[in-house]
Length: 415
Ligand SMILES: *Cc1c(COP(=O)(O)O)cnc(C)c1O
Image (cartoon, rainbow, N blue to C red):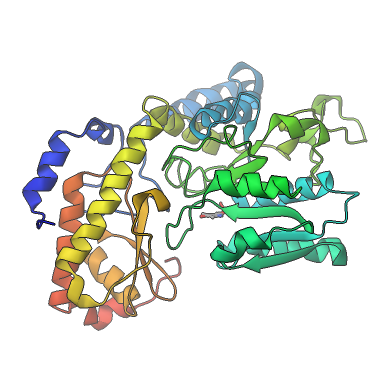
């Protein structure tokens, strides 16, 4: 294959149908931000929306806003918008709480559906995102010996699904490697064995098209603050397929999930439908920011986003091979674009120092202990030429051994 040059990337930018979307975001001008997989850049519309929510809705209308400014409907309204991005129907998605809390509710609800069977296993992947495993450890500790968490390597998942499996909890795109699972295949297999499947879409929503109903998905949750750019700590979304709504029973039975919360009765009676996944009062500021971030996605097509994302991750890997082959980076992401999400992971024993040095040279990636460098390539906010420039700077840092400077070895609390 011919060597790429910077002008190849400039040409791609000239023909990029998504190029204008960057104008809708505060894209940093002084550095290349490749961490949209962890915290997406801020959509410009958020500022105006927040001004309205603060100055008009909160300051002026105060408590009436729950009705007159439709605060009460926000979790449903935004849920219906996210449904369009993840292949769900109206009334199947609600926005609330964090992914960690939603995982607890979903797995508990799935176990409730399996009540009366002898199935005792929650199956997940070794090395899944920590919170997915930690929350399951908490849940199984609470439920006692009748339920246990079993984790297996990725290659062993399909064989590990048996008549004992109650729930399969998997992350679609792996947070470290970017490896993308075959949701359709695994869902079909698990259901054929009588298990329910819960998909964690944290690194999928806003990064690639997801067709939950086409694959007959049972339940899912995901992040608002990563690719969707909903803001730091943005609320999470939760999906339950309509066919499970009548059987839905989740244990965080707060008043917002009640059928008639404003009757203030003593006894809990669950809302029919996705509303039961709500627990308590929602953070209106976070919801409002997330909504306008989602609105940007509704003006484009996830297939176009996926196409640019695949091209970008391909080019990133090609450039690493072309420019950095002598620096011992291990390619941790799959080589085929169809098998990965929208970030690239490289392994290097000095990954931490390299990421710090890159950051000082205006390229922001992130580091996941013990040795992974991650570069999130967000199609709506990055230019092709950013990839050329980022890899060129990486090469420079490796060639000059800039990363060996002790100042790049200082630890931060959040990496
Ligand atoms: C980011 C991420 C989470 C985050 O959970 P929070 O409760 O929002 O902190 C969970 N799972 C996966 C796979 C993630 O990538």
